[in-house]
Length: 338
Figure: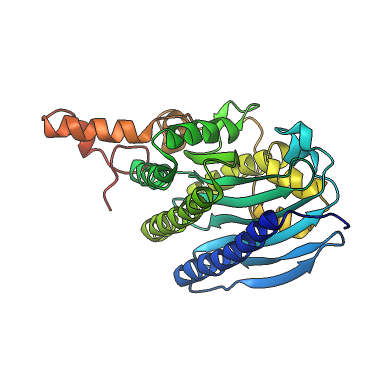
């Protein structure tokens, strides 16, 4: 491309690209261990401007209806608008990027979908720039408090590497980002989202990104293991397809990663592997009041401080309060008992 790259940025990018590739292997192995009926198919691809990636997709499994675990290391002559919106001074500069994108759509409606993204950008010019971005979020059709609390607890523990203020900040960012304005609801129960992360130093940022990846895979596979065999029928399947329609709406209308991939001339098949394999839209459909389907919107598709609520409930139980709440179980209830 004719661009001179500072040696430290070049080393940072290549080391992170290798680390993300290793995470791709680890994530695929973890998902494959849960899936008895399907395997990942891999497609390697290259990009005319430079770089390429490995797309790995599993479909039509007994547990995972679709799982996409995609690695890339790409470069281009001009940073796309989706990547420079928060840093307009970098628009048009040459860039390199490495990333890992994970989206899972389980077959069982009681098992939540999930998303994880980890990425590094380095940008040439004066001054040169680099930053990490990413995060993870959980999208249930039938919500369980236990899952949401475990998810956010893992997120908080990963964020501890950056100090106590990181988790509340990244949680709020996630709640705001994974929001469908035209529906007036969040995509799911959130998690963490971060971008433009270049402080306090590269080593701490890299350690944090590793911790996010480890927190995602250990926590999500545990949730999948708990929910994959939950009984379900046609009613739950129909609701799952409706909720997947909302997931598709977010990805196509608002997701910056989708826009970046398309704007930068990325591989369309890999970019759209994040879409659910099946989805539906029913005109004017509303859940019956008081039903488990209505409870999803009422209790799970609005920002909540899951950890503060759970820790408050524990204090109440220690003091003999809230016993009735503790006895509730199942989707939309208090603490689900497996």
